[in-house]
Length: 389
Ligand code: UD1
Image (cartoon, rainbow, N blue to C red; front, side, top):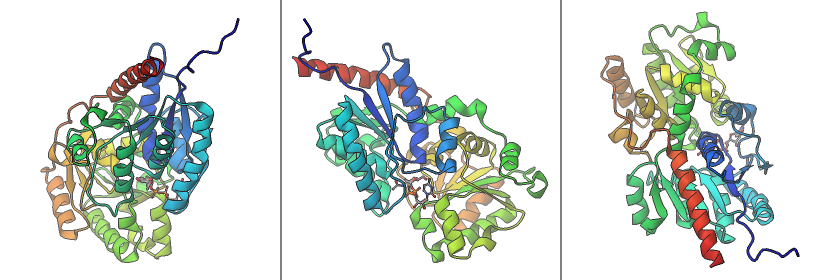
């Protein structure tokens, strides 16, 4: 006689990605789930926040990410519209799959939106890269971080200071687990496949003869609204980069937001010329190769502050603050804001061979995803037993 089981078996773990910086964090987690015996059942959900071939497809290939099981196809919009659309489209996915947990990574709008849907439905949420704080609430990511951490059941952290931040916000310390940095898992796993500069320039259609990097080069990325959304901010910043390029040629990988604003504000002249190679957003292996070979990196990215620390390449961060203080205390990162003198001074120091060398932080050892998978697998099993008891 067939009898219905008294309790449904725990459903799959829903793994959410939305935007570019999520992909390199989720790839090693999915692999670690698959490597468990028996494997942790998981479904990859893409919200569609990033959708361009440059921002999305190439990274999926580079990181050997599977085709998402579910794509919510939300696309671009204001923060409210984007967050609301993700929530509306994610709710039926949760209803249909009875997940044992929803795993979100990082701090993008998709992270908060999916965490909120799950939490309201009583589905456990695991937040990877929890507890980081810039203490700057004008940053959309900071709002996403604070709120996601408040509603997540499991908080996996990359550095110990995260635990102090969480404790200050009243988060039960039992929920937080120091596991290391999954983004560095991806970096270490893919380092051997990183593309050399010459190949990347060729692919981007930049003739080797028109860009002389024989005495070194710098890598630039810029995309934060606070740096690129106003002409009177972006213009002077590009002016400083132009000054830097007179001392060190620069490879500038342009985010679509930045490209659009440069055109809209009529600033193309500032990035023209032989000393600056302007490239579209790069694939993961291209970017890894660019950073690995660079004399220095100038960026407002969160992830690249950590990647340069792991690679031992000096990083000048074009922001007033960072949510990743370990990259300053132990790594190769220096905050320079948009201060022309500070930027040129630090560039001079690096070119004189006095750049920060740093060391690799604790547990940035390529095994963070393995630790997460082991902990989460056990946690889900114990929770299922408790429910049955
Ligand atoms: C988002 C994240 C940010 C992350 C960044 C990496 C939030 C709040 N921000 O910012 O933390 O560092 O991703 O890129 O979630 N666009 C395209 N093609 C795309 C995606 C976007 O052209 O595939 C353009 C659109 O004009 C869009 C704009 O870029 O409006 C911004 O995209 P959005 O996802 O809103 O934010 P990002 O600035 O990329």
